[in-house]
Length: 334
Image (cartoon, rainbow, N blue to C red; front, side):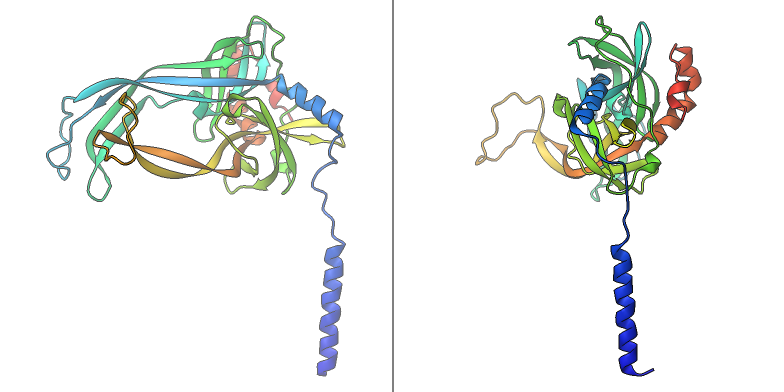
């Protein structure tokens, strides 16, 4: 084969490949519903979305530094100081079911559960934790509150949870105005059908404000999760993620917003109990300082636990939830 012939074949092959690629079309989802249908469906979903807050209260003991960090700790010394401390978090919940008196609310485990015991240890010169306890916090109380559309709030009770997958169900009383909320108006869909670049909507309470936004789906290496490119803010945890299908004129619940990617920075800050005036920037600060973690959210990377994972979680706890008077089986049936 001469050189001119080989060049001709290569050009033909490349041209054929480019033409074939140009003819490939991919349909990732049904057409976008018209604006009226979209607003109607999201308005129905809004009736199922509630705001949740949780506060945990601890008795915290602070211990003196040991004579030597190299020797293992033998006995717990007498604490230098004891204080009452607290931690709070807010998020979003979706009403799954309700009966005449109560309702079940789906949310993230980290929104409604704090650790029972928190330990902090002294570190050595290489910044490795030692066996010497620096502070010990023991939880003595935890309160969960559900805020309803009517302006009322009720106390919530954590009934089942999955720490590893960040899923929880809270039981709470229905408000006096029974028509304030309604269960999810859409079925649990199959998140496995989501395609790269498919559009979804997210409804939640970032910073305490009811907000709806939309983003594009990307796959995630994490089992039972996918990523949406929305701007995550504190309070979105537990937010409902739905897709709208213009072909079927239907809405499906495909997941729950759980967290965002972030970078951590550690800062030296004065004690939270310091009531003296703010330090002057030009004058050296000589008071007591503590290490505080500052989380810088990487906006546009929001992790979502899939509806499939949520369905499996509910299926595992069906017997217990139905004993409470909530028929969960129709909800998880495909």
